[in-house]
Image 1 (tube, rainbow, N blue to C red):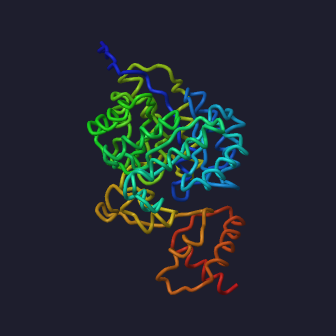
Image 2 (tube, rainbow, N blue to C red):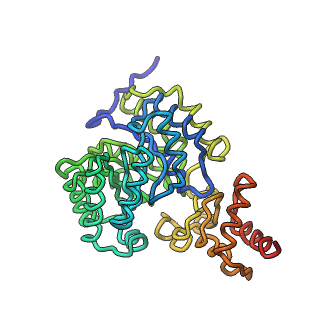
Image 3 (tube, rainbow, N blue to C red):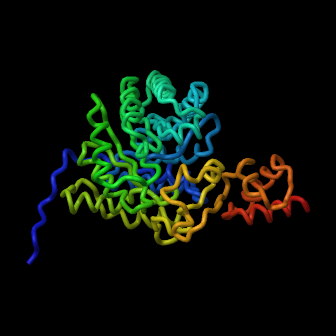
Length: 383
């Protein structure tokens, strides 16, 4: 005898976007190729995912151009979205030029909203400055005909009195959707409901949740956001993503099926999708979330290595883990300088970095840590 489960009602069935092909770009040492991107995108659309987020653009010559074009070829630009970095008006104009060149139709602006992240990335934590920057960027994009989602990076840790006026300003400027990014896992589901309720109360708002999984609550927080009126959930295949990962797509879709009776998605593709994505990411058979994994505190951006408290829910040492550098091809002079500091190895970083990039390309981009970069610097000295 089976017990009938009565689905729990929610305000509306959420629309799903998948950020595997974008959030992985921020994950240390993970780099998908165009072939993997096309396969993943096709399987996502077959599953019923509405929007495939792919790549990042900050200006001319985006390194993710091939990834974006492959995804467009596979599922069409209307089913794709690309992140556009926001720093100032001139930079945004150049980034939008690049997005247009690639045929992007739907962009997602990444703008830090917490005081800590705004000061680190924009040089100012002024709420007025953030609102002006968002209005300017959104207006530029809408004038060019883009569909615009704008985000609140580290939004979960941004106080309501700072976050709500920023979101309201974005919608007043013509934005189509706002994404709350729980960049640093921080909220319980009950807290998430309160935060989202404050955003859905804004006139004309369309809200998406993008939750990270360091504390293992990304799916729960995503469902809580929907209970509070969020219309979109952002997830990733297998939970792949920087630090503790993101809301895992399979767990999210099966939770929607079991708890809410949502039968819109074809779940039969999920196992193949997970295997393709995990293999392409070089993560083996499974991606493990949480603070004890090798990738939880692995970084490839100097800003994260120099300011870890801005990106970490808790320090690595608290759980017996360690902070480390992991990188393949995304090498920069600043990153190399960080790796060499304190090593006693002295090289011309501006000359050494392109030399190391070339060596990585010839060797099919093996994973590098700090020790490997230091050893390579010694090889460079002897060359």
